[in-house]
Length: 294
Ligand code: CA
Image (cartoon, rainbow, N blue to C red; front, top):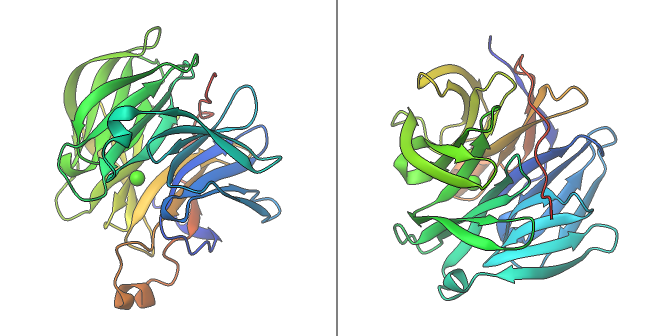
């Protein structure tokens, strides 16, 4: 089956990222990282709220206690959409000491911890890390020597964590202890073929298959992590596809974010929908995304 994509929001974003569907509010949260903006989009009405958080914002997730948790340049912040006010809650010294580092993709695990990773905007190799923020506010570095921290997902039975460090051109899996957040036994489960772009954001569907956004590859692909095999491709009309998540009333729509960043003037002219939010109906549903327990 080949799903077609629909343009749902011609956002013109520099770097749209981090889509998260809130099933209670029926809203899509997403960020434009270099624009320092968090967006709350209502696809039913087309209305959208926008919040300037005053610094890079790599990811946004709802808090169980209300409001939103953000990965900002060197740590974490909370945002109250009612007032538009954001405030830092944790700065990570190892990140703040290096001005070229910034947080990138982030996501909550099934126990409500928030995982987010960093990278060097100057292109330094293995300068980033993946961190885990517990519900009580404790932060620990879970993985060091990361180059471009990106997609995260957890298996339906909560025993495996999937992770993308983009230049590895692979999806790694770890044994996962949901009670403690401990990870072990890193191995490659999916190798993304050269020439199809770079693996960026990721989500998991109700059948346990992974959906990977391809930066520079104009597509999202579906994979069986148990076999490492590609199952399906959804083609986008623009090259830099950044991430995806399931949403909609039946959680059976795949929302897909894209970017203008990195495209030449000629490429931008040829790809007028770059930086938009797209939607596909892939024929399989997702699960409600986890939220921050703190
Ligand atoms: Ca990304």
